[in-house]
Amino acid sequence: MENKKGFVTLIELLLVIVLASIVLIFLFQVYLSHSSQISSQKAQINVDIASRSALDEMGSKLREGKLVLPQAVIGGQTYTTGTQTVVVQVPSIDSSGIAIPSLSDILVFTNSSGTTQLKEIVSADSSSSRRSINHILLNNVLSLNFTYNNADLSQVTSIDIELSSFEVVPRSQKVFSDKISITLRNK
Image 1 (tube, rainbow, N blue to C red):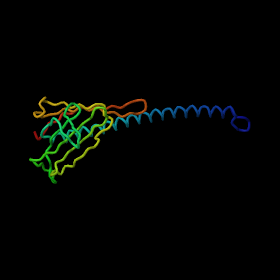
Image 2: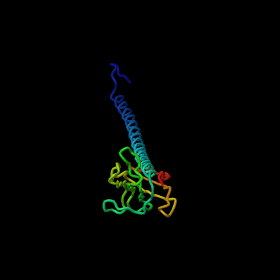
Image 3: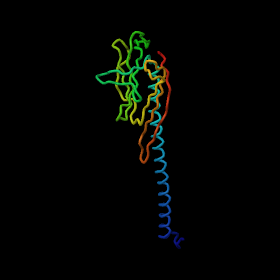
Image 4: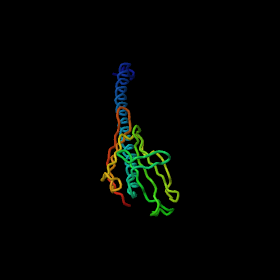
């Protein structure tokens, strides 16, 4: 409705403002919805990448194993092979990465009860080029389960590893679960 001088009336102006507000509110809701979906998808990707990386790291290092040990004492802490901990003897290596047959390093992966952390502990022989480490391989672990193909640990030739981890996002939790089987190459 135009008045005789070509100006817009106040009612027309208010109607345009109301319609524009409705469109903006709708667009803002779409933006919020997509932002939430993107955050959720990023969290799933992050937990998948971190967990897959931890599984690959465990698999790669455990394959080097010579022997699954019943337990080892490293830095005053006793680690016992079981469903949440694996203790493996691996060949020491020289500076070229070649195995030194007569020497061994100790490798431990553990998810101690009461924690949500997957730890990697390496106790290297003094002649080995492998570094002794004690670090967190993965946070937010829901469960870690090691299964051995033989009850006699000295006869174990393969290990199944089941890992579940999570990442919390607003109003949900993203979970990763996977299982790998590894064979000890140096057995």
